[in-house]
Image (cartoon, rainbow, N blue to C red):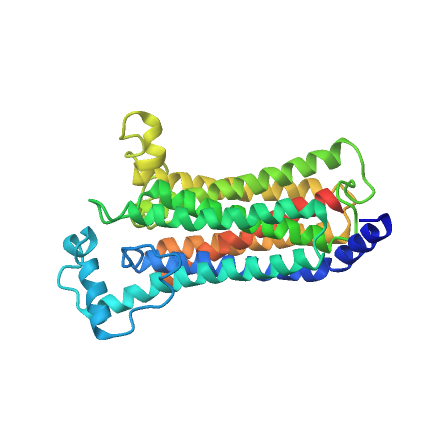
Length: 358
């Protein structure tokens, strides 16, 4: 390829940046919907209703009464039916089946919405060379996420009719990583400033420290989301439903019941809920600290807006979390709380990007 052709191809890819960014943001919105639907599937105890994984052949649900009966009989062979849902009717089974079915179909839909435009953008030269690896990596991570989802479901099809809290947390964490990657690349495509510039016109130690704090916020919100995965996997949200104290305790006596001590952080329902509360306090303190430090710097408007959005998302998420807890985990609020976590994570990713590239 000649130099002129190469330059023309690069110019076409640069001109297509807004199209590629919009596509990635559409996929990101679908990922948010996927995670929230997954939360609803778990909260309605529907996730173990499909006992087979058929990535290519499982697009259509049972289409006849005989097919439904056969699917129901397969479900009856597994622990959830035998230990919890003994006597469930076929219409009741259909109710939980469609939650899990919709979750899986949406996952396939996300794969297609990513893969087909990606292939078209590549073939028509609308993706810059330096971005191809990151986009391919996101696609492969999405494929891995499907495998992780089935790996999670399998853990509930053996003896105990509950998925492993560890596998659920991995599944949730990968979803957050995919969302963060989609948003970061989309922001970079939409940015008019070259990546790596200092914050506004302020250089030096203060601006660098603020960028570091922003990345700390991204990491802390991600860890808090993973903590939420453990809470969900253990049903730890049901053990203490008062706020700010845990019944009459600031430090419940059951915090360290398991041995060795570190096991409490992953398998003691009291400790897991306590840790999630502490994580919320830490996220709040860190974002307030970032806001305080940012007041002393000459941030550009985009960075200031990103900070305000992060603070607003934090307030919303705190309100949703407290309401979900004290109202005994209603499905609608719990799903919104999960969506709030995604919103807060997306906002902190945007903040980290704006402080890096503004």
